Length: 117
Image 1: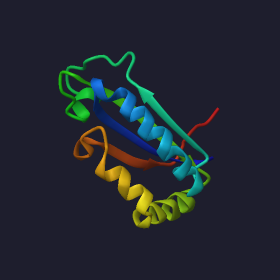
Image 2: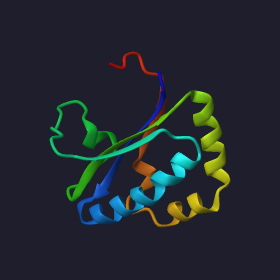
Image 3: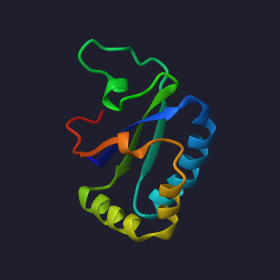
């Protein structure tokens, strides 16, 4: 099974097109670095929870929507190598300077699949 990096971020609704453009430019870079698949999902049916929910997790504000994303890699080793390449690639640094969301509220992590049917 592949290795997965998952991300959740709050994006101002007014920045949806800018986010989509940024994601479309970033996906080929992730693939160049070893990713097999890049998926970006805009909130469509994200309920408010009583104790926790996606919006609370990223401290989404009133006019923000939640984006749930994941990147699949062949292995954790390939993911680790890709992350190292990203940190030194000037193209990735450009994204950090013009993100259409508050990156400090992004949550992310690496995941080893338990089931993939």
